[in-house]
Amino acid sequence: MVVIKMAMLDAGSTQSTDSKDGDNLLEVDRLRKWFRVKRSIIEILQGRQVSVVKAVDGVSFSIRRGSTLVLAGESGSGKSTIARLILRAIEPDEGSIRFAGRDILSLDKKGLMWFRRNVQMIHQDPYSSLNPRMRIISIVGEPLEVHGIKDRKERDEIVLKALEEVRLEPVDEIAYRYPHMLSGGQRQRVAIARALVLKPMLIVADEPVSMLDLSVRAEILELMQNLKVKHNITYMYITHDLSTARYFGDRIAILYKGRIVESGDIDDVINEPLHPYTQALIDAIPEPDPSSRLRDKSIRIRFTMDVYDESGCRFYARCPYAMDKCKYEPMMLEVKRGHYVSCFLYK
Ligand code: SF4
Image (cartoon, rainbow, N blue to C red; front, side, top):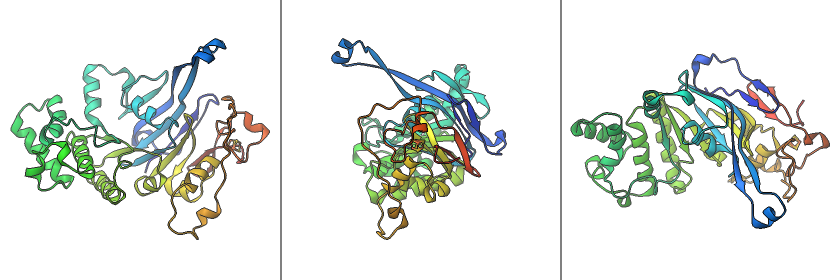
């Protein structure tokens, strides 16, 4: 089970469930990252020299050990920026990140090595994430070498076992191939093996199946799920695709323009979405059964060039239910046990 607690930075509120903090592997609190963006020449002539993109704006959540939290939202919602912040690829403007009880933003060099060993990433693109000039055995063995396993024989043994675990067979042949000699699905299995060799506690998977054929996606997700159970891995699964999220996640946080707008157990959120944005995302899931009730719930998102006022609800300009009071920031409410939403439709 994943437990999410959320805080809206501006609203200054924090919701949490009754989980014990000691159960949480990752705790993110009021994380903020804004990017300054240069304006066009016309905008500069108008005196508007820079603008700010609030990529992540006061996001808080936690993930319980051995569970999967899905971060879902469309492009620009902030989900990949959150991943980069957690991996320490970029620094936050504000907020804290605790991993296994340690503040990762103040780790020294040794602490950082410990953190990097225990947090691994699976990228979206299995074609560009593997070095094309290296054989598979070296690609998967590289993290072991970086983290101190200098004996080649010992490394190779661990790698072959990892390739076996991700069902890349025949192992002895695949190990000596180059990435271009493998299919997309096989390459993603290599990426998973590479993430697995260090026995990490947390794997951040950023759209790991979105570039794969439909027929391969379920196999890769099933593999990741089996490895989770076997090794007690915790996942942060990032996606725009709620159909795969439903298969893979325990809890879900829906992101819109840098903020969490809804979160809860994945079945609760998918079966009874509360926020108009979540409803629209679910409505966009391809539905093989035309009589499905989800189709009856379809909502029409407004397409508009309105400039939305960031002091209010971020979804205001697109929301079909927008009211005057939505020009103010809605608080996060626990509408049902563990199911939170930020919207004035709920009191
Ligand atoms: Fe729509 Fe208002 Fe709810 Fe925002 S707060 S999602 S504008 S109804």
